[in-house]
Amino acid sequence: MTETRRLNPIFLKYFTFLAAFFMMVTVLIGIPGTAQAHAELERSIPEANTRLDGTPEAVELFFNEPIEPKAGTVEVLDAKSNSVTSNDPVVSQDRKSLKLQLPKLGEGVYTVSYQVISADGHPVSGSYVFVIGNPPEGIDASTFDPHKAMGHEGHSSTTQLSTEQFVLYAVRIAYYASLLLAAGFMLWSVLTRSRSTLAEDTLKKWGQLGMRALLVSSLLYVFIHSREILKDYPSSEYSRLFLSTSIGQIWVALILLAIAGFAALRFNRAVKLVWLAAILGVESWSGHAVVFRPKLLSVLFDFIHLAAAAVWVGGLVLVLALWFRDRKEAGRFALGFSKAALLSIAVLALSGVGMTLLFLPSLNYLFYTSWGILLMVKTGFVLLVLVTGGILHMRTRRGDLPTTALLRIDAGLMAAIVVAAALFTYISPVPANEPVYYHKMGEDMHLTLKITPNKPGVNELSVKVWLPENVGEPKSVLLRLHALDRKELGPIDIPIQPFEDKELTSFDGYIKAAYSAEGPFIPFAGRWNAEVRVMDKEDNELVRTYEFRNY
Image (cartoon, rainbow, N blue to C red):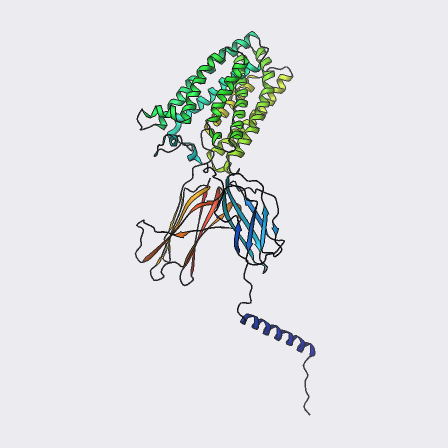
């Protein structure tokens, strides 16, 4: 008799479950169109790449599919890549849109960046740009080129240190030092109410010397700068420079004030203060501060910075002058000076921080620009001055005289700071931008990418693609920008359109296609990655990337 074997009931149960599972998967795979598409941005308010007259009430993003209600984020950034609001976005009831309320915004270029998760769990991100009003052109070293005021082209602007500019910088240092000395002596003649005969004579003598130095250095400074601007141009251009341009008119005012300073020394405190306000105001209005926004705050910081520097420089030189004539009198003056010096250094530091935050798009610029490096060097000297000034103040409070070594150290640090300040007040805080030109040859594709002028704001962008003749023209070309300093932001897709390229740039065996766009597609300064994606007619995709930066 044959024995019949029965299968284990547990095995049959699992076998039946697995078979049913695989049949279900097979059926689902075989049914077309059952997979849900990822969410895509259908439209937005405000629309991408549009210019508005005023602040929109909110940013609204509309998607074609529902999104996760607790995972969507929207951020609006200004021209310095700072978020303009801390409000949270609100998801609509149908979960197909996000709305972010906005505060009142000023003129500028703004970036909308979004990151959402679609209902099927797929992350979706992107960015686009809109403009409010007519924002000013981006600021870089070319902004400070005095040749532009004369309509001259072909001269390079003074943007970084170079051996060719040695004389100009030497004159700049002499002018800046004499300005601080003359203003400092005038300030101390106002601040010091009770003076001995010796102190009075010293102030008069050094006040006259400071004013002479200011007049001579101002004339030399204007002469050297005007010659540099009008090099290779006829002498008739000088009248236009001094009468029709703001920089020329400021130079004229500077020389007139330097002459008027001799008379101001003989008048009362009110006249001296008016002269001080005028001379420091002229210098503040002719420097970098005038081109940065908000202009009033920037110029005010510069004015306060100059006034504080004048108090310290003028007072220290007077202490040294008295030291070599009467050390006891120098000690009495040093008692008041040490307090004023510490206060002026504190004001210098605060106003310097304020200007740095206004001038630089980010503090990273301190490490890769000449202006930033000089500022850090100057800051190091200022810290040493604080130590020296603290020791000087403690000695004078105890009734001890300042030591010769201490005064020499303070004077040496003062000279180093004045030199550094004179240089970096003339060097551009933001380096010059260079247009992007990238060309890559290859058997499967040649590519050229151009971005002009490559600064935050409006730019012209062009992409030229050469594909082999047997491949034909591209099916699509996508240009996309990624902000490398803000990697959490979504990419910015540039709406490039075909255009007729008249440049004679052909390659045997290849067909050219050219695309371009113009608009504010680079909303803020920083490091960027340009990504070009080319799809041929057989849906083969070629990708090229290129990193660049602007300031």
